[in-house]
Amino acid sequence: MDYSLDNLSALELKLYNSIPNNLNFGDNQLEVDGTFAKYRNLHVDYFQLLITTSDEIIKLEALKRLIFLSWYSYTEPSIFNGIESLKNEIIFNSYSILNDYIRADKLDEELEWMLKFYANWDWAILDFSENRLSELTNFVKTVDTSISTYPKQKLPQGTMSSRGQMGLYWISMQVEIEK
Image (cartoon, rainbow, N blue to C red; front, side, top):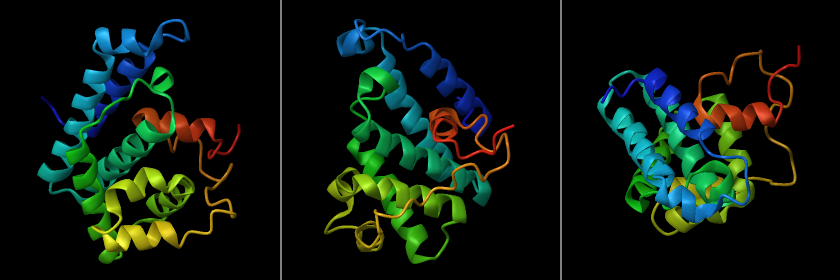
């Protein structure tokens, strides 16, 4: 398997685009047709990229996608995103690496505002971090969720292109400047 960001993003978008926009399709069918298993494998592939690359830019991007998928699997119904039952070990290990990034002050501006946004659904993170990952837990608990933290219509067009479901989500949240 080629664990490049481009290949994983293309695979993810192909997988996401295969999810029917039909509520009658149902979660059971996504399990039967292998969509959930494919997303679990993709999540593992992003983690493999994170831990095997020496390129810090690629590490950070893989971490962003892992954190997004972990958060999104808890906050959005699986019938819409195709994500269900990600491996808890991969989620925890991703959050552990994120905890290390926070401790080392290695969050870039983008990951910081993303994480602040995700903190609005603190339980999706705290279920894994509380009493085990102190920096991440503290970060999430100290976010003022009454303040909007993401850059609505401030990022250049294309910033979120080719970034898997994370990119699609943030485009839908209108973070990019409209043409």
